[in-house]
Image (cartoon, rainbow, N blue to C red; front, side, top):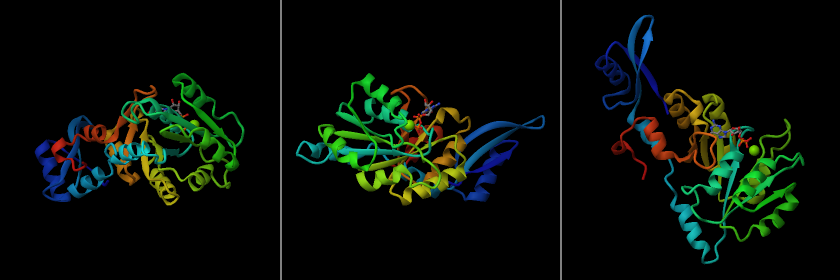
Amino acid sequence: MRLEAFRGRDLATVFMEARCSLGDDAMILHSRTVTDGARPMIEVFAAAPNEIRRFHQLLAPEPPAIASRLAGREGGSSQFMLALVGPTGAGKTTTAAKLAVHAEAFGARCVGFLALDTYRAGAVEQLQGYADAADLPLEVVYDASGIAAARKRLSSCDVVIIDTPGRGPRGADPIWRWVLRSMQPTETHLVVPATMRVDLAAALTREYSAAGATHAILTKLDEVPNDAIVAQLAGQLALPMRWVTDGQNIPADLRIAGPLLAETLDVAPRQMVFA
Ligand SMILES: Nc1nc2c(ncn2[C@@H]2O[C@H](COP(=O)(O)OP(=O)(O)O)[C@@H](O)[C@H]2O)c(=O)[nH]1
Ligand SMILES: [Mg+2]
């Protein structure tokens, strides 16, 4: 989303400037007082309405897709497989644990984990701890040959959350690529920390979207002091967002993206266009 900042001595002047630049129906997303030398100034962040609409369309509401897929399961349909991909340290494993037990994710459905530990580096210990604490099954896969057996052992789960490691050695085919190729998850969520530079996040999204990522999850919203930065980043991701996270507490710090980002952006509900 293209946000522009406007500064002036009073709100009326700044609004006028925003309208001149972005059109009469420019929307003000955020305002604050800043100082320019010793003088207090008003700063607003504004965007054109079509930009806001585009952004809201990316806020995927609690999806009929999940509900209908899981409802169909009672009639023998396949389970819901959700893969988490993204850079190391983005919050994939923590988010996997939150999603597994949070009421706003899969409710009381039976959830299992599938983790990849391709270097046999004990990388799944963290997830094992969460699985043990929540009494959920976890299968660890070391290479593509182990996938079928692991999936079979998780076949009674309604939902399987696949946790992937980060990129791996430079130049190697990243693990997440073979996960997407060989497992074909129902949804693949690219996990991106809100602290990431906007240009890097945009490049990351292009790379992962091309490889099959279907959604994005913004993490660490609590570490970003400026709401406008979050808005800018969310707009750049250009993938639907259903969940965001804003803290380390499992599972409390997981939120449905739409209402939270709308509040962050200070947009009144009546101006929201997502269903
Ligand atoms: N402040 C904050 N920290 C988070 C959030 N999500 C994850 N973390 C922390 O980020 C670090 C890396 O998380 P982890 O899940 O291991 O990342 P992974 O490498 O992508 O699996 C851990 O210390 C997490 O507690 C969040 O929403 N806010
Ligand atoms: Mg991890």
